[in-house]
Length: 404
Image: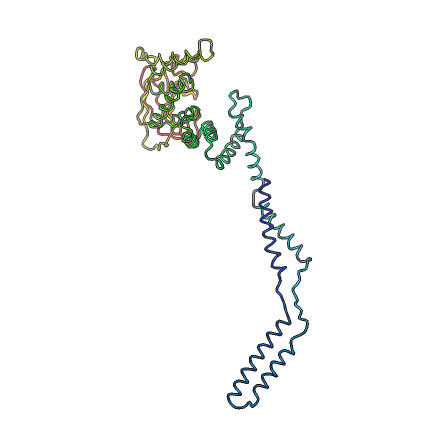
């Protein structure tokens, strides 16, 4: 803000000079010079008349008359010529300057959004603090929604001044991911990746964003990045986890089991994460053997209504509900947005609550919803559909043709 006020003071000074300088210069008024010019003009006119009279033969002694005219011109020049300059009254000058300054700053205070500029500058100064809290893995003091907006503004300001800051673009991309803003996340992380293509943290975050978009081509790029990370670091659990979940969602259960098994070997049996990994492995193994008991599952076909306009990116949530249509799903699966119709099979491995498996129901209802930003909660504008009540072990068809 100091620089800002210095600039405004300089501009007001320039405006004041434009106001004062012409007043001090004034217009020089020289009475003697004016009379001299008049006498010269009279002398010239009289000389022209003498020439004309001489040519007509009316003048006998022209030379004497010329001398007399010259002598009269010299006699009219005063001994002490004085020049008079217009003076400036301070009574007028000082109030004029005060009005100029008050108008300049008054208009700015009224229309310049000074409070917003001050808040913006203060937000920029808080960038280190907000960044540290966002990166805090313990999450003891999470950022509020307003603080996330402030951090985004501060980051964009810094990146405008230093566009080659790969860390800043990485942080902005992670904020976009946290806010489910796929466009901001992809653009920011793409910039970070172009600046530092071999940074593992940037590769991981960029790959996760590409997977979130749901585009098959982008998902292929994400897998390539994740494999490159593992090639550099064979113990990178985050890259393995992303590849495992991606393989599971694509139905490549053997590959998912392999990744989760590698992760379990790295963390060890005593690590709390081992229990979660065992559960994931069991879930994938149950998918491999689901054909042995089709009565414990339901086959679902998801179709798209003719009136539906698909978003450019997003995901499809398919969920199993009790026959009474209760909003809380019993089981669910998330699929990338791709070609319709989609076919999948849901069983106990997709159950949301282990204590209440899908096989505890004899009849179910299937719902499907398209979400552009990957949010678990439905919102206005989402397209959805639901099936009729079907018996467990049967097949169901869901047509997405309604909108919240």
